[in-house]
Image (cartoon, rainbow, N blue to C red):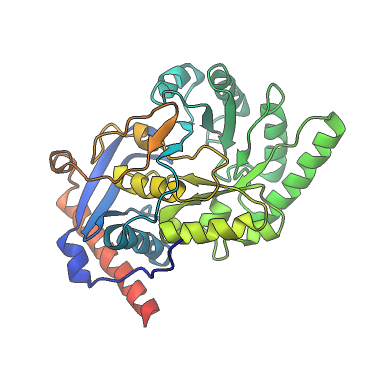
Length: 342
């Protein structure tokens, strides 16, 4: 784990190598069908600045720090060449599950989106059942979409026909996660079955204090993402702190392009311990990307550097209006990082 500080190049240097692309998606994910990404080019390679449009500049600035780290410092030293990844199943109808899983050859773990607005628990159960027919280890991700009572009911139902590896962010708030863990422990003691473990995602990556949910007793597993945390080295520092509390990490994607995914894989490759498959296989959700897809081998991806393909990038350029929007956002977030450095 390098303590090397992330540099802050002049804004003119960032703009010089900046390009904005719009990636079409195969299915709706997080409510969007295209993913916009600003790519930076620096002396160490490429970085990705892609905070979701609704994020305020103060939150988005951490994503810029991450992009600069990747392009100006490069990755930390790896401890493994390949990183196991999970299949990601969006909130599709159960009949589409085999098609989705075919994009993840050899994956032994699947993350299934649940609690989608407008869908029912019956649809979640059918989707999970369809995944279980093909994949041994199943985890679910609610993105904080359930109330406490809904989460309790849903997780009891979803684990009745087979164990869940864990449930990711079933409720939105830390107190709800703490109470849910208590209730699930009571159910487990009464039934003799293993307790459903809780993984925190938004309670870590969107929190001013990422350790709060762990100290409060609201998480068994921590889902961590490079860009929201400010970079690969920041992720490694947090993972070391979490390990001291007995909480393993799962490195996951923020719906990244191939460039951002490369940073996630590099961070996962540098972790001393990697207990769970990582959520870094979401490149298959895009119809087109800025680089050729990494070849998945036995459910794992190589943690090698990514260089965007100029022809692919040229075919994915965002509109002039959207490019101006992203460059203005880049300037504002650079100003925030500059103020912090003073």
